[in-house]
Image 1 (tube, rainbow, N blue to C red):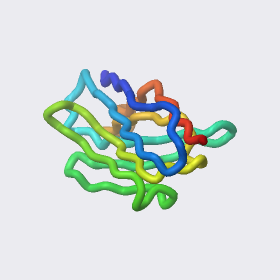
Image 2: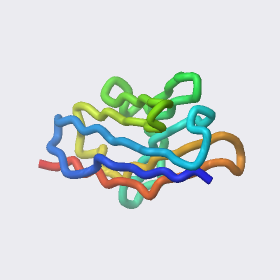
Image 3: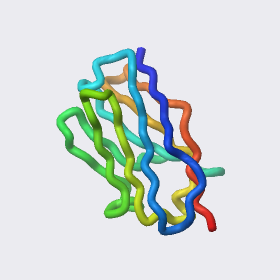
Image 4: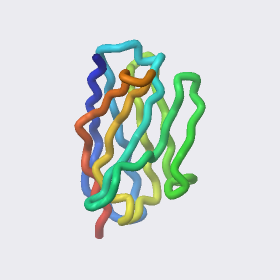
Length: 116
């Protein structure tokens, strides 16, 4: 069983930056593909960024060039650096760990609100 705890959310102004962190415990972190998802009010949860165990990354088109996902396999951490934030980035951001079907875990989420 993997536990994921997100941190770093909050209220930020448009154009500002924010870094989200996710601490994983209870599994072999380096085996997992790690991802950040988000869910805005009234919308479905969507993939923001993913980083595989080997370091390959992919991003939603809406965040390419602004967000960067990274991982530290020593600290069991995954990060999401968010730059040039927009009001439409407002959502609850969830950390995800995936190894195989039936071995997928979610954090409880952290709220990011982009507003002036």
